[in-house]
Structure formats: C-alpha cells, structure tokens
Length: 424
Length: 108
Image 1 (tube, each protein chain N blue to C red):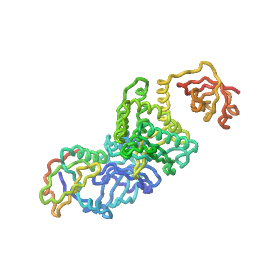
Image 2: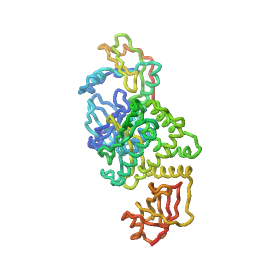
Image 3: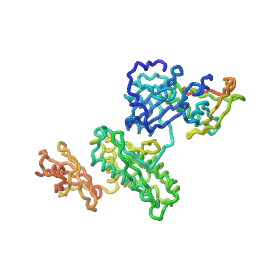
Image 4: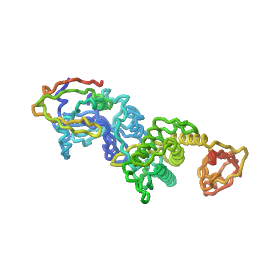
C-alpha cells in the first residue's frame, strides 16, 4: 500500500481479528469490499478491502473489533464506518494471500490510514436484505458478563421477561390460531449470551394453512426495534386522544398488516389503535428485561439469529433503561392519573434492593385492585440513622414482608414510589 | 482512461486459484460487468458509489463501454442484490480495441 510501511508495525495474533464465524458480505465489488462476522472468541469484527498487491500476491484489508453498541449502530445506519474507524482503538491491517487466507495482522490506527483510502462521511451500512428468524439471542456485555458469568436471578428475570414479551406479541395477533412457546437453548459464548427459539404450534384443529407465509419473524424483530429505538421519541403519540403516528410506527403497522394479509385472516378495522394499545401493554413487560441492565452488566444486545448470520434488533444500556422507565411512567400517568398520599399510611412491603448509603431501593407491594399482581415501587427511607440491623435490612436479607409507614405515589392502582418514614 | 488492467480477471492475477467450487472458480475467469438498462441504471451507479464510499481509491471511476464483435462472451450471472450482473469471458485476442468507451463516471 502506497505510503505506509505497515510491516514495521506491531504484529497481533491473527485469530484476534480473523473472522471465524457468522461471515457476511455487506458489499461486494470484485472483492468483498465490506463485511462483518465474529472472531473465534465471539467478538464482532468489521472488515473492509484496502488493496491488492500483485507483486507479492497479497490482499490488504482493515479489520476492526466492534463493541456491541458500534455493531448495532452501524448495522442500523446510526453511525458511519468512518466514525467507527475514527473512534476505534482496535484497528488492524490484515494481510491475506491470494486465496483469502489470513497471513498476518498488524496493529494500526486511524491517523495512519492514507487519505485516499479513508471512507467517506456518509459511509453508512449498505441496505441489505435483513434476515429475520424466530431465533433470538440476548448478549450481555460488561462487568460480570465479560468473564462469562451472570447473576442467576437477573438471567431468570431476563429470560422470563423476554419469553413472556414475545409470546404475548404473537398472542395479540387476532385470529392467528397458534400457540407460541419460547424455548431456551444452551447458553453461548461472547460474554454471556442467552438463546431462544420461538415455536409457533397450530392451535387444535384450527390450523392456519398460510402461517408459513406470514412474516411473524419480521414483525417481532421490527416491534423490538421500534420499542427500543423509537418509542421514547414517540411518547406524545401514546397519550390519550392523540392519533398521531410517526414514520417508524407506520412501518411497524405495515408489517403487522402484512402478517394479517399473508396469513389470510381478517384484519381488525382499528389496527392502528390496537397496535398502540398493545405497545403500551408490551413496554411494561419489556421493562422487566431493560430494568436488569446496569448492576452486573453494562449493556444488552438482542439479535435475530439464523442461517449463520445475525441481525441486530435492539441495543439497551443503562441510559436507555432509565429513559425508557421514565417514559413508560409518563404514558401511564397520562392514561391512569396519579395519586399521592397526603399522610403516612401503613403498607406491607418486601424490600428486594436497598442501597444503605443513599437509603433508596425497590420493594414489592401488592396492587390495590388486584392482590394477585404486584408493583415494584422505588423506595426512599427518610432519617439519618444507620439502616443496619433494622427491619428494612431484615426484609432485604431475610426475604421478609414488613409493615412500614409511608406516603405512596400511585399510577392508577399501581404503586410507583413509597416515601418511607424511618422507624427503629 | 480505460486500461487493459481493468479487464484482468482474478484468474489471470492468480487470485483464488485454490478455489474448489466450480461455479466460483469459473467466475474468477470472467470480468464482472453490469448490463446497462434504464431499470438498472440507478442501482448500478449506486453499487459503484458504495464501493467509492468505503474505499475511494478502489472505486473512483465507473467505465461505461460497448463490446465489439469478437470481444468474447457474456453470461448473465444475476446476484441477490444485483440483477444486472453479467460475467464477461474475454476472447484470447481481447484488447482495448474491442471496446468503445461511452463514458467514464468519476465519483471523486
């Protein structure tokens, strides 16, 4: 390559940046110009073609290890290839022979890329046909997840929250006559990865002959992308008497409409309204998944997997999780109203999370209208006395239900906050 | 300016000689071209513009040409995202005299 003597650069182990699995060409023009995949350790890699050297029979490419966020942002056209290279510290020049076998890899950096090879500002992911499937993966990254571990309780909540979420979405398609069953598959590598397969079984004798043609997989993927990429922005559209619909929402509605058409089932007249109501219902379920981000892992990437390729659907980090929770509360308040106790009242709660320094945490409490269902309000305990060896820490550590005096904030019949009066 | 190097095949450059897949090996003996039709025009330009976006040095030009008699054979080899793709198998005597350059589109 003109102007760069890359052979004097630091060699790196080729297997770190060599694509071993999930190879997918995003743009081909005589050579794979842009491609992605994963290395043998499960890290995501993006590669681009630089140059061929006929004299030495070598192909020079650029390989960059991606974070889950970079991978998601690039494949969803939120960020350009140029931006990835600019912000990355894990760029390598890869030397391949003329049979595309990786020979060597060298450490490289953005500033050393000759100007004539630099991707343009608008080097966004080329539009490719997205492969959808009913197989999903949730990959946790950061903290404990990076040493391939996860807290059992959190994994269980994510699994239950996610399976409930996808099964409910299929059930909400009226007249489809299928029984969705989400099956867990063995955990995989790549930090900590949960794998699911959604089975759609015909309901009794009412089988739908056209089910195979209905793009249920695409609908579920677009649904997840919508609630994690657009719902926050669209929050005003979910308030009572607001009939507005954003472009991404209309795209989702179109996919749902295709499901009805291709499955040859009658489409409800008020499809848009039903979809909006379903989204409001579903975000509460999905919050169970997003709520887990932060303590023991930093982010969560949901992908649709199948045919040896992956399509990213959603990326969730702590910042998203917080905003998502706030918007859900805002929408719920708009629909159900909010009430706040003027005086302290007695409530029976079970504290499952408590920071004894900030005196804040979360508790479980039975709902007013239905004691089969529980809310998990945020709690704050007043006073300055230490919380050690009090009934609050007893509840936390011994899983005990306790009675507290508190002022409650309720959205409809659900508790959203308890300001607890400290009692010895 | 067109160069004879633009018409060198992978096989002539000894690229992919270990390939075992017959179809792919055969494609290495051809030059990738696109048939110019009104319905494909935008897609073709977009394809080469995409190459330019990711590697400006590799995809700075797009040559529009007409093949003359005796230049070789063309075979339609449509791809998933590129229906206008053809494989051009040059005749042994192929030279730049076998093409008429219609236009050179510059992306830079």
